[in-house]
Image (cartoon, rainbow, N blue to C red):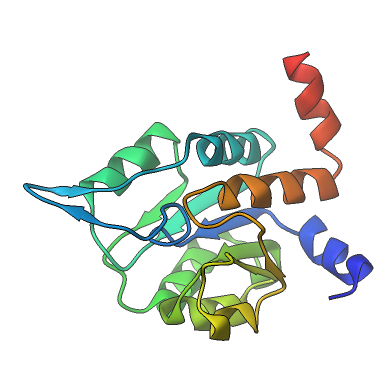
Length: 173
């Protein structure tokens, strides 16, 4: 996609929605007495930075997990939808609740259950470990894999494009 068109899309973003398995995690499941997920700490800071600059963040996942619930609470996520069978319906509910337009929403997904949402939002993103059919329809594919910094990469792309990055860096100097 042409850079100026991509920048226009990114500048409109007011909400980032994320799939969990394969995006916030590497997609692995550790099953024992419970379900365990590994989250990348730099992704968490990326989410906090988005929120600090007024961008809402939500998780939409087909699975239910106490680990996801806990991570969402730690990061003060605005919207958490677990056990979602139809992510498109969930997206429309979210749009209604948030009073945002689809073109102001970014969605990051990696598999077929994300396809309709990726085609509906203003800015769509996948990870390099996503399905080929998904990578063919999105606006952008991150360099980092899911669970390995892809969300942080997305957060930085949005904040830099929206001209907020220098303010962030100055807070840490």
